[in-house]
Each structure stands twice: as structure tokens, then as C-alpha cells.
Image (cartoon, rainbow, N blue to C red; front, side, top):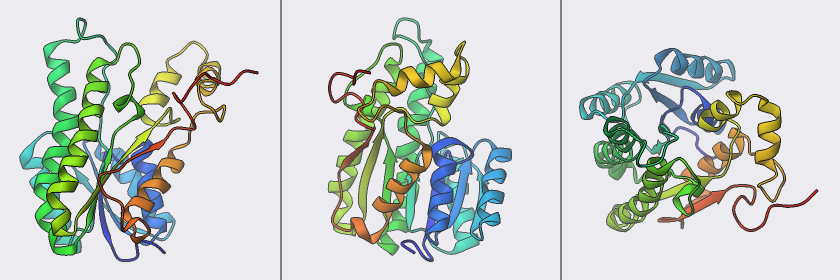
Length: 257
């Protein structure tokens, strides 16, 4: 197994991609810390991991609040004694233009999506330095190109790509690798919520799938397995990279038929 005995902190892992990633990390032998504001969902993720024979701990965490992130560090060290991997996955999305976005919505989106990467990295890097660990950040294909009605989300995801590179060059000397993942449409989390509120969710999924070269939207496990790779020794010479896992979304004209 690729991650045997390593302690992985995964934010936003009470559902969606984060939950799928937590299960994939556990399958590869990691001790997983499920960090999320949704404690009920976090406990459910833990139960799923334990049912599969893995070990996990749920910690209620608001990644936008320094004291909450410090408590996450303290509880992780108390339970497992070290930290080897940080997966900054927590995010929210406001589907509005700049004009329609309220100041409160803008500030919250920046605080969670970008501020969460900053705070978790800031508080965990001293411990990752000791283990020569790694950081995986969650960006999006919207960090490279944008779609309508998600201005704040696109802004945060573009910033995460730049922040990933900055952290990689600053902390490479510490043996800390920092990479980010840029998914296309994934049938989980924010995209799943979007599909489910459409008049015909199945039709919405099919329409989104046609925008991808592979003709379908992705599954959360497909992103989770990429996160495992980036956190493992298989990616030992990778840092500062933005890895796209999009099924060919946005690379050209959509397929016909």
C-alpha cells in the first residue's frame, strides 16, 4: 500500500470528493483525519473507513478560522503524533456574477476557498517539515478558464494554482512537496448539488458529460486516486504542478453524437 502508516489530514471530507479521497487514502494504509464543519458527515466518513478496515478520526474544523485550524493540528498530534499529508479540499461556491455577489458572500468564499489553504498550510507546515511531508491543494479547471456565474469561485481557484507554486518553491528546501488538482465536472459535492436542483438531474448530467472528450462527468474516486498518487512516493519528483483530471473538459470542441 502506498501510504502505510502516514497521517493524512483531509479538509472538506464529510462528503463529495473529500469523502471519496478519505476512503482512497485509508485503502492505501493512511491514518485519516476527516476535517469538516459538518461533524455528522465527518463521522459518517469515519464509519465508512472503519467498515473497510481503516483508521480515521473526525475533527470539526472551520478552515477559515485560525483557532479552529490550530485545534485540528492539536487533535491530530494528540491522536496520531505526526502529520505526513495535508489535502486542502474544503471549498464553497457562489453561483453569481461579481455584480450580484454580496460583499458577505465574496468574503466568505475567499475565506474558505483561499484562506483555508493558507491557514491550514501555515499551521501544518512546521509539522510537515519534520516528516518531509506533502501538501495537495484542490483547485479546478476554472483556475485556467472560466464559466459564467461563478466569478468568485474562479478567482479563488486561479489563486490556489499560484499559491501552490509559491509554496512549492518556498518549501522545497524543507523536503515538502506541494501540488494541486484541477478537476472538471465531478458527480459529487458542488457539481452534484447543481445537478440535483435541475428539473431533470439525469439530463443535466448527460448534457455536462457532452462537454467532456470522454463523454461523461467524472466520479469522485477518480480524483481521490490522483490525490493518493500525489501524496505518495510515486510522485516524489513532482512539486508545483497543477494536474488536470477533467475527462478532456475544455480542451476543444465537445464531441458530437
